[in-house]
Length: 318
Image: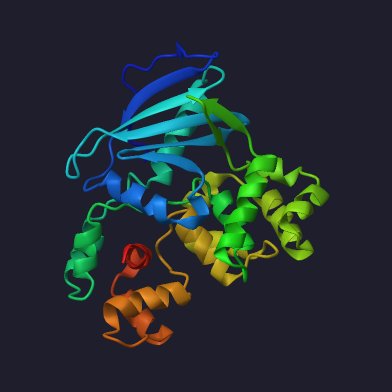
């Protein structure tokens, strides 16, 4: 579902031949943009990808080879949310590029997610209810594209987060596109087709691991040949099966991509950080095992992914 109101769209010539267009988005309430910005400030894989002001986010996306810088600013309230967006590019935007950019913003910030049922379950969970109160209005912030989440899954496998982030940033600088707006340069993570056609030796020079480099190339080729609409809308099992056929994408990586790249909440990727976060809320001084975690998660049904996201986010803020 696309939630946007294209009022007063225009194509103004900015300094140095840049073009801008504006409009508004209407998130599903409750929506607290400040909570999304707080998450982005503290999430290592995307920490260097954007500029964040008090109630404003600016970053870049590549749409069919065209670099578009978007700024999103809150102009509403948590229970009646409204976001104003501005799209900026070095050439005028076609209707297709404009629609794709607006759709990308909405998907990235999960603006269409209706949290009513999740909140109803969560407020009945005496241990979890305080987490909901702290994070009320937070919609999941995904990776900007599912492809970027897949690359992160490969880069972060058995590798320190800081080192994986530096490698991701180097890939962005080498193979992404960029645009300077108001004196600041915004760089996009490369589109799948661009990384798929990259010289493997150039990629190896950045990644410095032959196996991981081959995995990244394989992921890029697979995503370049697949329509994202299939990944968003096909049955969970179908997408999970497709991901499992990509070399280097195992069960944990598949669940991460489905959750953090596609907003598919049906299943969770269990790892040490989630166990620790859940233990902080439910453990009463002890570390939970996976069996106990699974039992608690089942109470949330198709919302267990949101439950896990709130737990992880709460642990980042604690």
